[in-house]
Structure formats: structure tokens, C-alpha cells
Length: 266
Image (cartoon, rainbow, N blue to C red; front, side, top):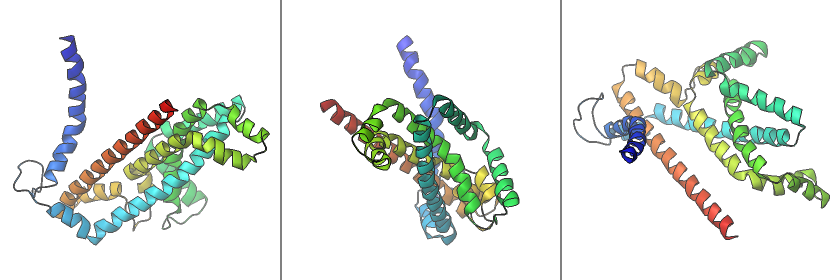
């Protein structure tokens, strides 16, 4: 009975998490206009998704924003983590505390604050992409920091100093000694940053230009409209995002296992 309960609880949790997504994926291959009765199976939603210029430009713009923001966030988050790790204890503690504020703070507060700071105080035009990019970097960089710090703590802190003693310049020691040790944390932070950027709604709402939509803002606006074909095409988009996430997770796990096996053999 105890064994049955131990199995039942994880199964119920997994069903609770994934059954709604799987139902959405199922309906994305039908011509149904609402969740309820399945009529016939078709690829019409996927055809609409890839042939509608409005949807294509929205997806491409969102992906470019996510990739650009993730690159900047990975750079800043990694530099911040390395700087905090090699700083004095008090400085490191202050940086870690400051880094936690954007993580804990509500996205709506962050988005509204950035809008006031960048647009009202600094006068940056809202019809540019600068406030939006800064907002997404602000959202993602703290999570990169949190992904890199554990890898730095696992690393021997004397490696960097040893490289300097052997004649390497600080930049060379950083690139050839420290970065390879924390690369897996940087990759994890980069992937997390992309996910956060794709998922964000509140910060994008307050900082984006009026003529630009991310996937999140577009979905919210589309659900309020009356274009049924656009709504059902978004089911297909959600399914593709889910499949892409699964593939990325599997690839990362396989690479991690291969790396562990190589380290064990060495």
C-alpha cells in the first residue's frame, strides 16, 4: 500500500501538469474552434501559423528579442557572479542580496518601474526597443547569476590565482581557466533567460513599442478578439513551444550525462 501511494502521488502531479498541455496539443491538430468536441483532424492551424504574415513577424520578433536579451543577460549575469565570487565577503553578500530583489519582486512592479525610469526620467522614447531590451535583461540576468554561482563554488578558487602566478594575464586566466569551469552554468542560465523572455508579459506590456508584440502580449490580445483562426493557430504555436522545450531539456540532459561519464572515466 505504501509503495502504491509513493507511485500514485508523482503520477497525479504529472497528470495535473501535463494533461492540459497534451489536450491543447491534441486540439491543435483538429478544426475545432473551441475546447469541447473534436470534429476532424487537420493541419489547418499549423498552416495558418506559418502562412499568416502577422503571426510570422510576431514569432520572429519574439525569438530575436529572447536571443538578444539572453546573450546580454548571460554576459552581465556571469560577470556579476564572477565579480561577487572573487570579492570580499561583505561585498559578495551585498551583491547576492541585491540580485535577489528582481527575482522576488513582482514582474508588474519591475515593468512599471522600468517604464517610469527609462521613459519618464531618462526620456528614452518608448517607440524604440531600448526599454524593452533593458527590461528583459533586468528580468533574466539575476537568474543567470543564480545559475553560475553554484558552479563557481564547486570550482577550486585557487585555479585563477595559480594561472596568474604562472604568468597568465587576468583576462586570459578568466577565459581559459574560469569560463570552462562554469560553462555548464552559463548555458543553463542562457536557456533559462530565453524561457523567461518568451514567457514575460508584464514587463513587455509596459516597455514595448505600440507596434510590436511578443508571443505573450499577442496571445492576451488575441483571446480578446473575434478572429477564431488566429486563436486556434495559437494552439499550434503553444504545442511547438512545448515540443521545443522538451527537445532542449533532453539534449541538455544527454550532454550532462556524457560529460559526467567522461569525467568518471578520467
